[in-house]
Image (tube, rainbow, N blue to C red):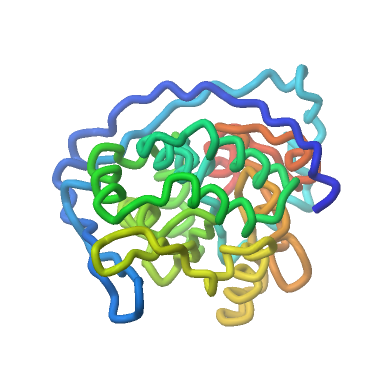
Length: 296
């Protein structure tokens, strides 16, 4: 999206605190198992990897950012939100406070170089598939390294996301996770939130017989530019939803708002404010409570 190539990113500080001890008793788990297909990996469950951390974010002052116009939603936007039948969430910097690939790269010793590529991809200045391949090639994570990362770096959930997902599900609204990140890191998050794995659209790291990195599954729609939009269109066509919303922080999330896809794009800027994305959103929120409070 050429209009987004000069998007400025405003980071927001996110000091963290641990979740309540109730999560220590989670029975869900995550373990890796090589799939029958060449180099593939399937995800199961593993209890010690699901000890998430939640974060609290301090939003930027709106007057300094110039986005007052869509912070207060119009009646049309509120009507769309209140009548939505399915909500699709981005994961990195939305459901979670981190960019998963950046965190994994940092853990593997290539954090700075990979983060630069992530910023370019989310700003829309390079094709997503190019940025994804380039980032992974910089550190080539092995299966053992990914497993170690997941054990030592549990998911850090954005404040309010659990309550929002619970509210949506209580209102019989279906919830999906659509991410350019990896299933290996998203499945634990889905388990915590009670989102079924069939409602996850994400990329998949591929490993060889010895657990070495061999690439990523290029057949996943989210591995390419425009992939999130295609995933949303696929969901809508398959489930015949009348109204859908996409919530995220990046250019690839905004792309999902198009005919046959999402009717509403909500920009969540509680972690990162990408100005060009926020300016084109139907609704700009800094806290998920803003969405919870407007649901019946």
